[in-house]
Image 1: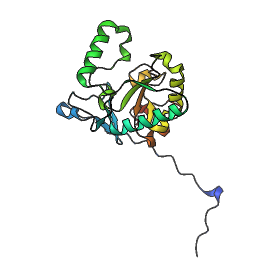
Image 2: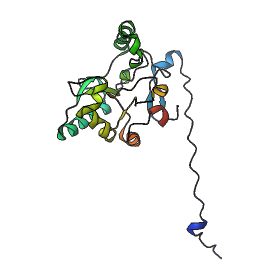
Image 3: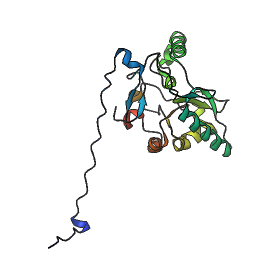
Length: 207
């Protein structure tokens, strides 16, 4: 005799899976030439650094972005233009030496704002997956209130980009709010960042 199927009221909901703790970053010495990766996503930060030896695997275009990020940026810029919004690149790929020079200059001249700057080896720009965007006119925090800033805030995730350093998340990311800094992680993952309050560290269970 076949047992009757349980009625909806008798069915027990499946428990939510416990988030999987990512592997520890155990890289040392020459191993730092390759970035720490969680679920296929590269993580570069003050806690997860890379050496000067790292380069984007497939740099392309005028800003030296890795090929997938460059292609996504092209599509996103075209979509914004169709909406009457202009997106300009303020900064793309930076190598270790360039980042180091920028950080040391900031340390000397703007020590009070040093949390806006990444030390060499801790910058996502070295991966070729990060890009600083603006409208070509208004820079820094006021950029968030421009048409470009608002469009990106609402639409960037549709093209695989996420706002990397959200407002109010400095203790988690190690950096102040940067409305211009977008990081390419691919559309599948980026779609889960709608609303721009989630950090990459939280998403990957690193925080």
